[in-house]
Amino acid sequence: MDFKSIKYRGLKDGPVLATGEGRFPPVPPPGAGTPAGGVQALLETGDYSQLKLKLLQKEQQRVLQQVEARIRNLSLAIDQMHVPADDLVSRAKTAVSPEPQALSAQADEQAATPATHSVEVQWPARGGKVVSQAMNPIEYVSLAAGTQTLNFTIDGTTHELSIEVHPSSDQPDTQEDLLRRMARAINGLDSRVQAQVKTGLQDAYDPAPRSRPMNRVVWLEVNSTQSGQGVDFYFSDGDDSTLAQTYGLTGTLPRRAASLMVQGARRRQAGNQISLDDGHVIAQAKDSTSGLVDIAVSQGAGVITGELKKVIGLYNDLVSYLDRHAELLRPSLKDRVVRPLEERAGLMPRAGLWANANGSIRQGDNFADRILSDFSRVRSVLLGEGGWSGALKQKLDQILSTGLEPFAAELPPRSELTARREAQSLLMDLSGGIISAYA
View 1 (cartoon, rainbow, N blue to C red):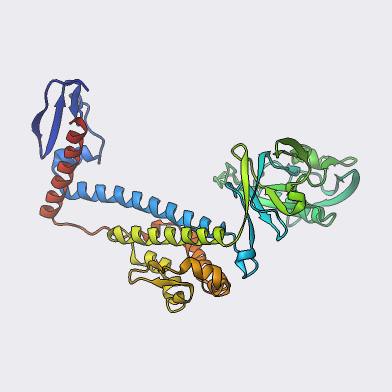
View 2: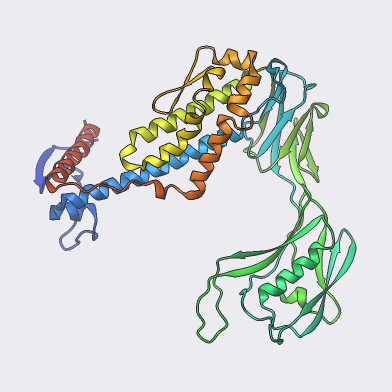
């Protein structure tokens, strides 16, 4: 960077970096002012206590976001472990997909190893879907009283549904009442399709004169219950009936075949199961992959050993991060994370592991050997029913379902002198970093 000189000038209690290209922080034009409550405004007013509080609040939000990301990664790693069915793991054969959320895989004991199978999922198979119009759930129906007929055709066979409508009785039908009656009639026909009444938040209004915003809507959704394409189905109106037309049931999202590339050959199929190695490796398409992926098939304890070490590493990283930012978090957050280990601390040495005082895990030198030679014990301590990883995942999922905000610590007030010193120190550190960047 080409600049003429660097000078330091006092701006209240914060330094200014002046270069040939301008100043940092930039000086606003006369009359521009600063945002109400902004950091610059607090600097100019000398309100160091509020400045420190705002900086702490921003840092606390960043920490909470980081904790949530670490918890999600750890929970996902537990989910994705390939736990051998047999305790003799030297014979275990494992198929590993690099994108398990889009393409899962498993191998049986006759699968060829080592082997690699190349698969690309351009898109998975999808069943048909019918979604009605969104309605105000408490609005009264406007159809004629009596029996309305609705034709529902499934794989070429047409079924006539009789739906009773009561728009002007002592207890008139609301839109939600009628949709639920339609769902019950549909679900009694064929187990290959399922109807559900769903609710959501949109712009719906109470029909009463006050027209109070309700922001709640209801609709009917009909799906195939089978994997892949499933059955073909659609609705139409019966004689002297407008039920399908009125509720928007005549439109159907068409079913779709899976589009795949398997071992270099393009394939279209009705289902999402992919047979490899003469059926000894089975993959399941769940979503589109990012191009061609290789499913690796191997034998032995290598896969589960690596996955257990990864889970332990992610767990230790989470505990360490909670410790480093303990002043911004409630102690109950770490208590929940480490409790499954504390409850099993006495059992961990059986698997070649030890619980540290801070709630982290130390791996013994013989941990990998224990997995290979005594997997039944490792399974019972770490993986089986009541094992550490399952109990930990349950706690992690509870935290995620609650949200991280309740675990934010109340930020303590500071004295004016302490806040002033901390704010000045922080600003000097920031300006030092800026100067270093120019050096």
